[in-house]
Length: 386
Figure 1 (cartoon, rainbow, N blue to C red):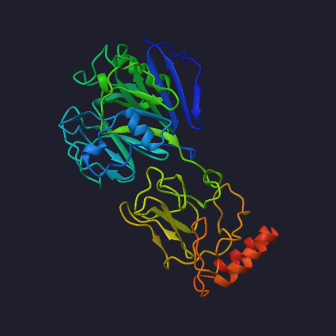
Figure 2 (figure 1 turned 90 degrees about the vertical axis):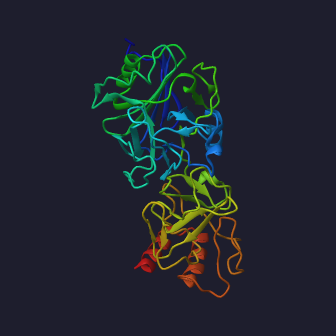
Figure 3 (figure 1 turned 30 degrees about the vertical axis):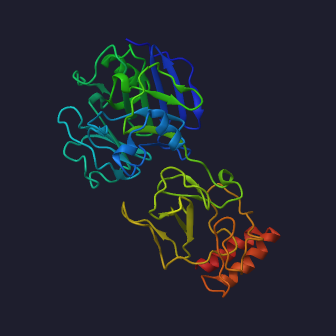
């Protein structure tokens, strides 16, 4: 049995820690933190494009860490069992009763492990969970050891497992070196790191743990191309994350995106409301972030639908209404092309004819912003909203 006295824990980035002992490499991610996220990447346009090494997936996604996930098979490495990334269910999965039907589904601050057999292509299956990966069976259930699938989990080879704590606030990833794996060993590590529910994933030559700046760390020589991986990475924060560009902190996915710059992984063509603000954004056909101002608010719609700008999009006032969480109101729009019908460098636009919501107030607000009167601005915005 492995010792529960682990080596020193290394913080890879805020909310993501790493430790290793006895050939078991463990990543713990704060699933409840706005600083980081755990994701299955979005499906690519074709199954062939989903085939990438773990490292290639990680680099494409800007990941801090990445591991292999579902078993796979067929000429194009189709995923075995349910797979979902960023609210999108992979449509080319196949079923295999008894081997690929135990799935871990999660979203920010929530998770469940459930039998997903015959729901491989069902986007309505527990839609509250944005991401899902499927393994060979239980390892830990309700904080207790559970006999594993001996057909899929072979001792003495590499293996991979994932789990969540009872409060669903921490996500645990474990990958072994090519010779250390055992079902009991995985259970020991999961329990030592607080997991109350855990499943084992694809193993053998597929078991890979990649860490930014270190590459593959678990010693597996093969470098297969799984269609499904799990990645963990920082979300980014507004406004400093975008420099001089306007920064929007979206609710789905909760990640900083920089207007006018290349879309970060996870942002789809679907319009998404900004978290706690009066804007929405999406990835346009050119692959850059585009945003709109919603004077009457942004309404979140069901998965798969554009979030709605209530009353339609309009011209954003010169100030930054409801400034991005944790930011200052001192972002001036001076010299941004207001009044010349040209978009500003942060993605905003002002109409020459003075149309758009509260345009007259917008000029007054911009002027007062230059004077640094934040308190006055907030009172005016409250009157406008009223």
